[in-house]
Image 1 (cartoon, helix red, strand yellow):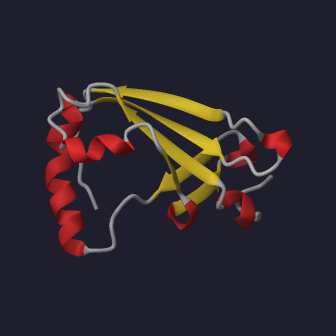
Image 2: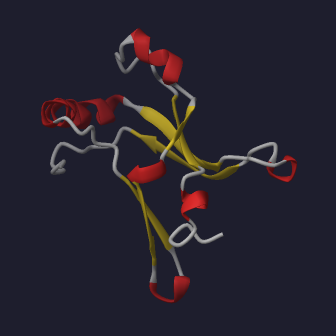
Length: 121
């Protein structure tokens, strides 16, 4: 299905993040219950197609709506990304027997990203 026109399909996309070195990165233990758990993307997702459909770009707006929370996150992310090893996976939520079990559409692994010179929101 085409997510650009099929809003129902777009609302079925989930993202799953798994942090391999959770404890070593110094993340709060309260966050560990979310590690490896899928989250619905819904309205945070924008879909773009490349020329002649040669590629598909998915933009996920992960910013909170609160400006103070956004600024706090922006100050933490660059240093934290240097420490993290993690994987991101996209999943389409299964709603019928034919769509189960759910399977990953893709998986991307990241390690020690240097984002100190990246301008965040």
